[in-house]
Image 1: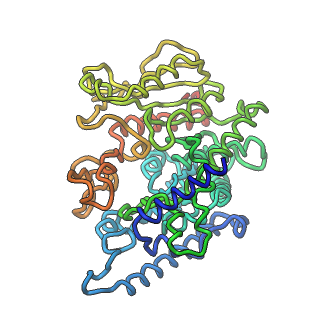
Image 2: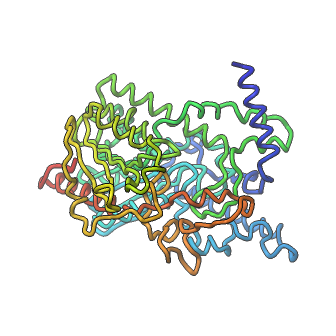
Image 3: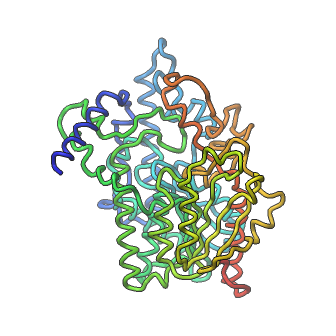
Length: 497
């Protein structure tokens, strides 16, 4: 075993040193004002925001220093930073209008009827939750978007971030949101990917700690619940970076990619994989302990949106580790199936159908919905609902009310991990023609064709769908759920399952 680990470490180190591009300043330089649990856990959320303001001032100063260092008539005003997210004058900075949603923020409403805390995923920013926040706010919910430590500034800040920092930040933000909700307003907590794991971890904490306000609902999108076993190697694979050899600093990185996305890091350090692996391990242990102690009967209703095909976290974690343990129709899992039009049958993977067959054949104590083609000849989709234990489906009323029915675009075969939470006309990630701002097309519409080697990133990475053709369905479902919860709190109806 030791020999295998040594071979793995040496093999990865050779790859990193020889194949990865040169480290840039945003891979190596650190900011000093980031939140750390061991030093700042006593802050309230106002204190967290004040510290974050200092962090972004430090980032602004660092960017100005880079500008001065790289000023070169031969290479252009900004040198290597010209087209990156770190240049305030770059095209992607214009597209994002200065990227204000890299920060935590409170999004208020007049006469709030509830409060929500939404948490982004790994390498992301609060922008990941903006469309969901807009939907909740339209129905009277004030929303707090939390920036997790290590995010929204420089990729290098992911090198030192820790699960303890994330959990402490979530606890601080949740306490603030719960206080604002008081005893009379709804309190939601939600998250995408790693943020979903953190939302679940905090919800489990509330089942044991009477001082913590229990959420009225947990909203999840593609939650990180399980990772492949190979993720465990993230604990050791970058160990050679401790040697005092500058070239070995590249072993701290799995990917080094141009930073053209204003709201998501493209470069990916080993520590990022390590911390999300720790988060999923903590969540699995927490769910097991809560199930054994009978606490999951008190778990607030959990609503999850998940693509059947998810190359980042997979769908099995939500199915087998979370929902298999959740008792009651109030817990609902919405699966977005692949495009099953007949002309695609020869090329689609059978794995997604095998997963659906397994789900439908297994005992279920929760409500299941599957969004899929109306029939093999149709691009239109609708949601079918299975009550707990039911073998026959019924039409989901929210989906059935959408007219015209949402349809698969002709060139799309599936949703995926990074497409669920953005509408198709999103100015940053939308795929529809005309998406974008200020003459800059949305990143989600950058479908380039050419030869490998023509760009400094894999051309195939641009074909991954970044927004949801069925956003109208998800939005309508979320709106109906919230309205039912609001009515139930007012004593007018039962909660929407």
